Length: 406
Ligand SMILES: *Cc1c(COP(=O)(O)O)cnc(C)c1O
Image (cartoon, rainbow, N blue to C red; front, side):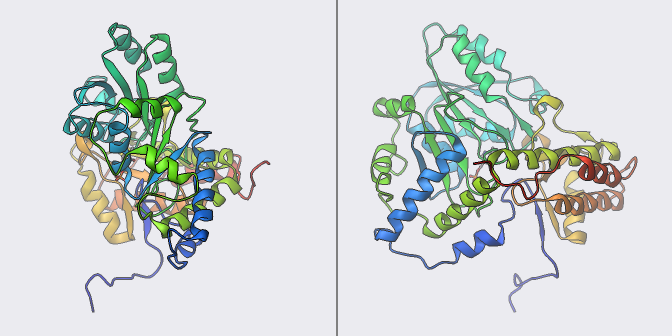
């Protein structure tokens, strides 16, 4: 018997902020036979997913789907629009913003990392007025792009992208706006066209409820035009050839057929429930989580209630408590995975994911697991968080079972 062949009774609680649990409906759809990616059925599948995904990004323009994790789509966004040595303005919201900036350096760009000092920047969202001031000072328009993370998965903060757009416009600056909503899409409201985003980057394994393995670039006409002059080397990521072949539902290389079956199912589920109902469900579960955390007497990582993430909640540990030891205990005792503290927050917090295929009772079990684990680990807990969460979930408006309004 292989050591990894380990199937404890009941379902594992995968409460990390991605990969999120994959609904059975999607797993079943993914088990259809792999077909000829140049054949007629594939073309129909391709056209349907390429059209459907636009509704989730709220765009009329092309969305490219890569057989890659989100990191690949990050690289695609930069390499399709920029040239070696280009200056870009990036905003430090947390670990993922930091990784994107490191990638920009490796690609030969010159990123400038704007942000609030120290840990403060990891507890609040993007500050649009800082972006506006910096852009106003750039009279020569040396900055070619502004890059921000919509939902910072390392902290549980969701930034106001419309406000970033207004800041760029107020400064009268032509920089492109590139946004990572890898973990925000299909959890929090997102409007690629209305917010004037030039490239939106997303991935499969967070709000879309798919396994890891595909990722996206939603592309504005301005970004597509920038591709013509962008000199960073690219081949696999290059948009024009992909967009051209996508018109008939095909790709220049072998796409991820079975994940596209899954995407087809996910789009049907999300649009069937209705995007607004999906967002309301996430907000509701997030609020229940925060009420429990407050009852425990612990701090929420996000310090600005205006930008609490509907996707995940970062829970800070009291001084001297190793958050990873608590996580380990919860994993071993209750078969539940929680997100680790990343980067500057290593060991200081854990993250509770409440995204995707999650409902009231999934969340209550998750919170119960956290609470038992905290007590067993000797973390001082002021009072049980369960009554506060249960009270909220029994009283707050529920969109369960509601369908999309046609
Ligand atoms: C998950 C995530 C990434 C990285 O995506 P991978 O699929 O792991 O490559 C980047 N940014 C954000 C905000 C994320 O949540």
